Length: 83
Image (tube, rainbow, N blue to C red; front, side, top):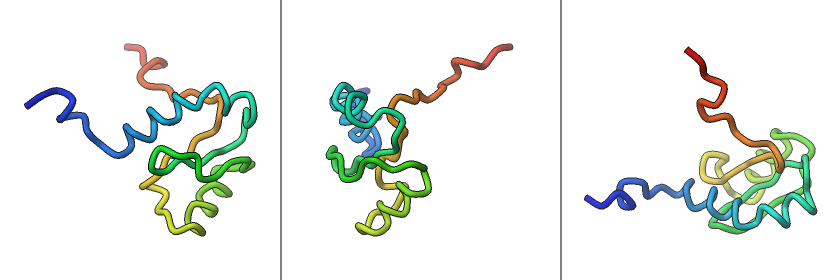
């Protein structure tokens, strides 16, 4: 099986979309919460994660089906892990 096929997951598409939009998002929405679904920005300008989740639910999305992220905050992926 090809590596790309192993990695196929809807959230990967949302993360790729975020990184494609990153410059504009950081210019227009730094520090705010946004919602990306189907590789499109479907909600922006939220002050909290809970506000973004509620907005996603109001448009019929499950918060596990979309990317909800604070613009400008990078996720830690083992970067702070030390043995």
